[in-house]
Length: 310
Ligand code: AMP
Image (tube, rainbow, N blue to C red):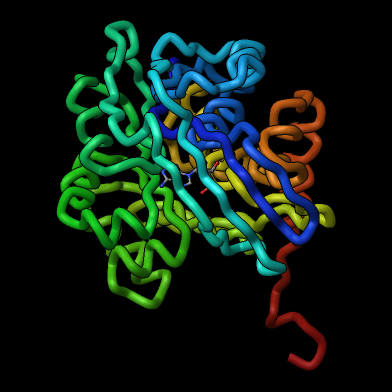
């Protein structure tokens, strides 16, 4: 099944304790699309400026991503500058230059309006809603957001959430959105806003899914080499949604597998700056790491009453 993503395509400048890069390929739609492209036919809607490097377009094409929905506009590409300290869970935004993104009005090409799976990456909730108004009957709409929109466009965000099936947010965003400090209560509260499923991303501590009455927890893969956490959340969503679109199945079991595949893709994304690792994976590597997740949480049951001295 085809998977549509609408989001930012950026040139990022990032500094972490392990190095620094300038004007490299980034953006929520880029990470999402490349991660998802291993599993599904991906269509991308976004905007780039005249300065966007050909290598970026080439990378999307190599991954068979449909970029007919990518608008090239006069002006400069969206730029984000961020920094991470040793606590890699927290991105510090140093500068955001919207450039061509400032006037972005997502236009969904006619053939894309039949997409069954839709991911609204982190953009203005009013634009997210505009996208949905152009797609009559998607099977699954997932959405991401950030503190900025929770603070500055709360009403618009709530309206968008009424039309969303699955929300991915990090734990700080879940707390802020629901005004609830306890993450379990916050997850339940999100489900009252519209989504049937919420996935709370907790960085190096994994991800928690609340799907009506069931809970599922996935750890993060214990990596020794984390160079740059940028794009981890979008790569997670790309792996998960790519799998759901591939299987065209929304059972609890498939969602759980999707969460682990998402965690797998996120773990690769953070191993290098930009999309340098995420874009160079083999299916063997992906499968091996997926299996490692299984052994990470596997344990045999015990009968507590039969323990010595009980
Ligand atoms: P993530 O680390 O998964 O939350 O996403 C990181 C990506 O989001 C970076 O590559 C940035 O280019 C992009 N980004 C940062 N701020 C914004 C924003 N305000 N709107 C859209 N995309 C953004």
